[in-house]
Image (cartoon, rainbow, N blue to C red):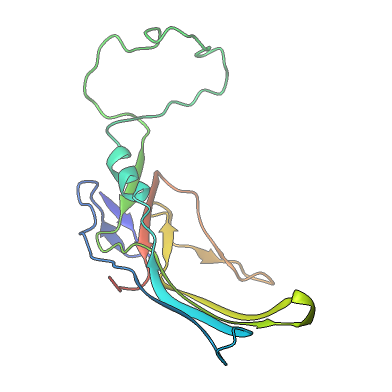
Length: 185
């Protein structure tokens, strides 16, 4: 099927194509020590790149192919009232035709799992009266950020006037795809 990417260009996604496996090892370093050897002043620190492994994103693509499940919308409860009988609304014949409404979950073939670089530096100083004072610096930055697009929406336009933010249009079908911003692993 052909969809629109985040730049408005037409692109084809396939529910059969999963992202290629990539090695995303964790690289980290940490250390602690004392300044004067008397344990009154201690330092600690660490830095590393950490990878999230949320495989549910990939499993959603396997489960939401537009073939396994479908949707029906009823605006009143009289069309199909609740029944504990699991056979009550089962179709009399199954033709194999696709559902009239379905959901697709697609993952960009170049998808990279999210990664973040974190660094922490700290100094602990023993104070009079048994207190310990701490000074700490923490830095965090995305290496691979993940974002969603709605490939069935038309390219957004901008409002004219005081609010120039982009506005989108209603989707023509339901689909979402996950993409990774930077190629790292």
